[in-house]
Length: 588
Image (cartoon, rainbow, N blue to C red; front, side, top):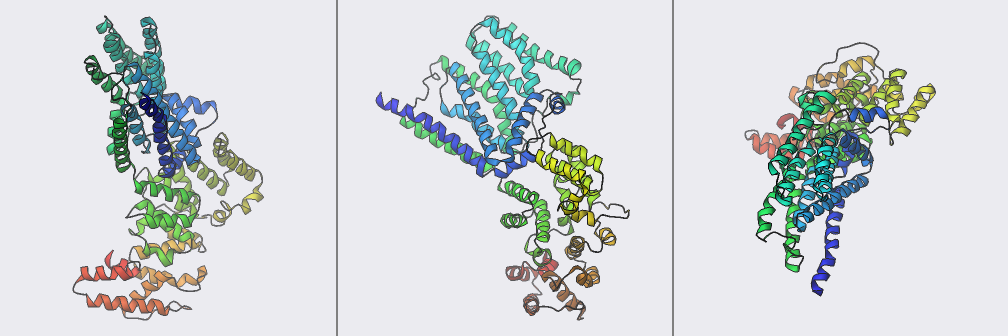
């Protein structure tokens, strides 16, 4: 007996350890995922924001979820909110099981595990976790009432409210309440209660969408019944919705045979060891199939790009294992910002000129794709991408800040004021918005502001058509021949397209942009061009470095040695010269 009591004292430590691991996992491994979730939405302290969100079923969950998501500006605070949510699910589940004579820590932890898998996925908004909590709380309240009439009253008056509050998460509650009445309360009017409970659900949804919300059938739920989840996350969502009804159904016949009762799997040494192994297996499966290192690295790169910490962008890019358009896009931008684009571009994966910008064909790209236009001083196009992102994703701080800044650059102060007003209604962007409101009031402040002054100096002053999937670099250079980024990106695009004739025509303008020596990749391209054309072209005022000439001679000798065996040549050259323009030109 003493040993059993001592073991029981370990239970809080065991549970506490589980949630400490939960907290550390999200605070470290999912740090940039949490920060990204905050950037995809905006919580505003005004009635309009509240009324907009509650205009659909599930709106209150969306509002509360949005409120908490604003604190994801700190990844550790976000991890704490995730952990408190998961712990609340654990406590409610434990209470529901206790009422139904089930006491098993593994079964109690399964919903927490499923929730952790879902929280790993950016398509699972935190608002949905709030909706699930509302549904679970309603059922816990329902089963806590012993008086039959009070339970019926709570269901018939409370379930319609639950649908408005929690949307789709209210549906499993119908079946949970029916199962509770049929299996555990053993009411005599089983058929009547079942029919009335289901009719309440159907009638509530019909009346609300037809006469209250006036919404189309595809908007019955604030979120799709199965959101855009992939692989394990989709199955986790299905199992989470079905878990409680299934467990009640399975446990009832076992309980009647005294197989599944309150003392099932008591807290003893053997079961502690078995439970630990099961928990470990659950953690390994969840980590293996729901944690995506590549996606987290992408979010890390995006985060540092927004912070203009270009060295950290490159450091993260060095760790990315293969080709990814967004990673290449930000890597090239970071290379330019650190003055290395023309010297080190081909040390990183490249996919042609498409790697300098993002295609507008994919909706997700609008959230990221405007950055390069802003840095190129292609202000109107940066504005357009930010606006389209806001239309597709809703209000978000990144788009609003870009819209405000580009409007100030263009001198559209009234429009800028509207965007700044939106940000002034927030907790964490109010100070930023107030600063730029002062800039609107005092135009002299704009001259020294780094986000404004550079782009104003390079404002486009002639009209030209935007070419799809193109940065319009020639048009930008025609407007401002002093736009160095436009020149470097144009030269990079020529190299990436393997257009050496065009490259040679424009390389002679290097002196206009303050170059004191020929960049490494420019040297590599010119040496190859000279060898191919059998000429000796060198831009006026420049010379090739002896090191690059020596490397080219070595490269050529290796290539000629294996000229009849291209795969062997590629294999040998990649080891020594995989980061050169020569290798890209011939083998990529």
